[in-house]
Structures are given as structure tokens and as C-alpha cells.
Length: 424
Ligand SMILES: Cc1cc2nc3c(=O)[nH]c(=O)nc-3n(C[C@H](O)[C@H](O)[C@H](O)COP(=O)(O)OP(=O)(O)OC[C@H]3O[C@@H](n4cnc5c(N)ncnc54)[C@H](O)[C@@H]3O)c2cc1C
Image (cartoon, rainbow, N blue to C red):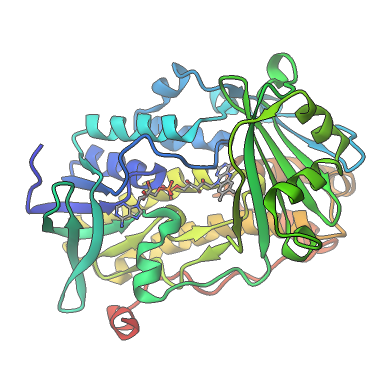
């Protein structure tokens, strides 16, 4: 495949957000190029999907490939108290009588490769091992990308719009100094993988388990293929680093604080090193400027407690594609064209973010909320499974009576390009 000098859209990053946006644009007849700096398969954490992942994946024609895949089917989520008491699993099919109620736990190296291969099949030019080094600018508008090519050369590629889907590498955030950490969600996470750890039986085998430790910390336990599980611990920095900063020591110490986790890992063997990340919730100051749109983790990242990252990458990637397609069709790719995109994506993020804040609030429990407000169980579930376009005002009015509900973040709107240039 030869690289052309001009495309309708150039996309930085071939992860879930970039691939989904690329497919949605190709379906709309746009010429699209994706530059991915890694050669796939490449490792990523973030293995658990939620039911509403189904719809964008269906719309880009990928869902049959998921159904035919070897990824374990996830029917439910369960919560385990600090004492090891297990809640009855929350089965999605009890809430939604729809095929989307069955979702998956994925090995990201395999899943991301399948999705990128699908993107190629949609007619998108995908170049792996090619890193976008810079944005091309003309009259304060972004008009393309400069790429370090796999053969060692450099190429300038023009496009009507650039989509930044570079994930936590945060291409535009770094270039324009658009970083804004979440004011409160300041957690540390340590994770690894076990082989041969205990799995529940039948349809519970691939359930996601959220197991509590003190001070509202928690473990995730995500069963994967090949008898492996992804397991990680998330908590406040001061709590986790209280007596050591060694990830292995902290992990072993915390395992002992939840009998369910201890029992499930006892028969397994750790089969990967520990990984650590901190202060990971953020939202870029802006989601777009003239000729540039940010999506997926390149725009925002939210604490992983509700496994919303992949959903937000698919859903947000598709929204970005629709906005970009409409802007190109109108002959104007100025920042104001992305106001609606900004409203939609910020609103979806806020719904999830409010629930994340509630989850960490000492005074809050899902059980308590539903007991007090049984009529809101449906809304709560809808939010958790990714139905983020619904109106949740009644739900959050009730949450506000027992827990802190954060004000909406005022940033993340499109901006005039002069702001970007000023920051350089
Ligand atoms: C600890 C942790 C646990 C998580 N758990 C879950 C979970 O259970 N469920 C869930 O849904 N989500 C989870 N997530 C989030 C999820 O992993 C991300 O939201 C998801 O990967 C976002 O997809 P993306 O396409 O935006 O970014 P990525 O998947 O990171 O893809 C971005 C791509 O861009 C490429 N790139 C970057 N810079 C350049 C460049 N300059 N040029 C070319 N290419 C470039 C990168 O190589 C990468 O392939 C978790 C995240 C963390 C940190």
C-alpha cells in the first residue's frame, strides 16, 4: 500500500478509538489514513467490556467477529466485601433483553489487532510502526501530520482533519499543554496476571469481580483465555505507599486484606511483572480546534472502576467520526463545528464520573441507594452498562443526598486555534 499525500482524515493511533473512528469515516465514504507507532500485536491493559460496547462495534460491522472470537463471555459483575462476602452477581440480561447484554473479557493485544485488521478491510490505509511526530499548521489551522516512516524517512501528509486517538500518550495534550488532572481522583494502581487462579463456574466463569479492601480501595479480577486472570489493586497513594513503595510487597500485603482475592489467587501463579500507574484520571483542556479533534484516552481518562474506557473509546470514536464527516461535508472544519461533539462526549463522561465519585464516597453504597430509591435501580444500571446518553438527573439528585456529586468540569470544549499556538 502506498501512502498518499492527501486524505480526508489522518488519525494518530490505531487503538480502539482510532480504529473505530476510522471505520465509521470509511463507511461514510471518507479517505482515511491511520498511523500507529507500534507494530501490532502490542500489549495494553483494560480487558473488560461493558454491554453498550456492542452498539458502536455493531455499527462498524465488527460484532460478528466478536461473537466468533475466543474471548470469554461476560454476563455479569459481582462485588465482594472486605470480609469476603460475595454479592449475588448482577446479570446484565436481567436488565436488558438484548444481545448486547452479553459482553466480553478481551486480551487487548489480540482484540486491538482484530479491530485494526477490520479497519484495513474497510479500505482504510493503516501504517504500523509509523509515528506521528508533529502536526502541520497553516494559517493557525491544523492541515495534516508529519510522520516518521518505518523506512526511516519522514513524510508530510495533508488532511482536512486530524483525529488524535493517541491514547494516554496524549499527543495533542502534550503539544499544546492541555493537561488537566481530575481534581479528586488521585489513585495508584498496581496490576499483574495470574495463571491457574480459581475461576467460578458456568456463566459466572468470566464475571468481573470488584473486591473491596480498606479505605475504599479495591481489586479487579478479570478472567481471560488460557486460564489467566488480570488482577489489579486501586487505592489512594497514601494508603498503598504507607510502608513501602515496592509494588510486589504492596500487592502481596493487599491480597491478604480480602479473603475472596486471597482464596482465588492461592492456587495460581503470577505470570507477568507488576505494572504501576498513578494519577490517571484527566480530561484535556480542549477536545478540538480548527482541523483537529481528540478522542478516546487522548481526550480523557476516567478511573477504571466501571470498565468504561473501551466503551468511551468506541462510542467517542464514532461520535468524533460523525462530527468530522459533517464538518468536512459543510466545507468548514473550524473548531465551532465540534461544539456538539464536545457536548455529547462531556455529558457521557460526566455521567460515568459522577458514579465514580459516588463509588469512592465513604457514605455511599449501591445497595443503600437502591434500597432507599428502588425506582432508580434501572437508571443506575443503565449508567453502569454504558447507556450514557440517557437523562440521569433523578439518579444523581438521589445520589447527592448521600454522597458528593462533583460539579461538571468546565473544560474540554473546542478552542480557537490561537490558544494552541500561544502554548507552543
Ligand atoms: C489500569 C487500567 C485498567 C483499565 N481497565 C479497563 C477495563 O477493565 N475496561 C475498559 O474498558 N478499559 C479499561 N482501561 C482503559 C482502556 O485501556 C483505555 O480506555 C483504552 O485503551 C483507550 O483506547 P484508545 O484507543 O483511546 O487508546 P490506546 O488503546 O492507548 O491506543 C492508542 C494508540 O495510539 C498509538 N500512538 C500513540 N502515540 C502515537 C503517535 N505519536 N503516532 C502514532 N501512533 C501513536 C499507541 O501506540 C496506541 O496503540 C484501563 C486502563 C488502565 C490504565
